[in-house]
Image (cartoon, rainbow, N blue to C red; front, side, top):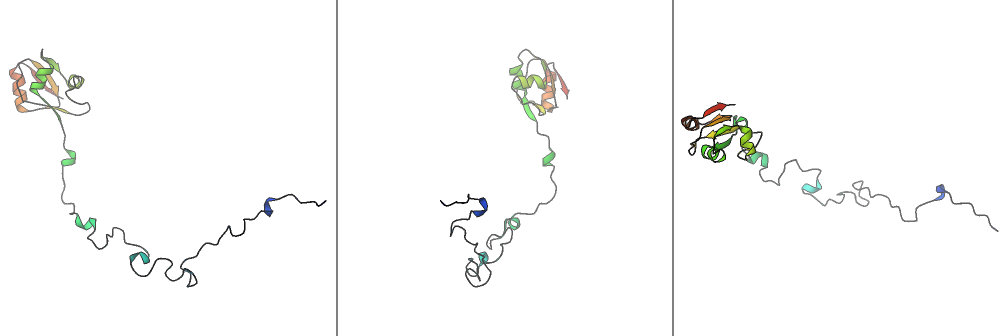
Length: 151
């Protein structure tokens, strides 16, 4: 009877031909030397293409105009507008009109300033509180017996 030693981890080896050496490109003319699989000449055979290069076409950063001057457009206040005829529809009996009541009735969205414009007519007395008013809106509300308060 033959005694076989138990199998140990340090005795394990990969199967013959399972591990192949990595091909070392560009290391002499033996296998993949000289051009290293990149072909001859041309952009792709060389190291890198410059950032923003578009194949000879004028690049985007040169096609666009340069930024000139300064604009206050970023800082302008954009109002939500409510016309007098809309206020007349929403408050037929008159009374107090605030930004909160306009939000609850769906005339404006919250967290934005409100401006009342003078389009249309109003016949009931309303006490309007808003962030801004047009001149004609102020006149028409006062003529109907109401008051205007700017927030």
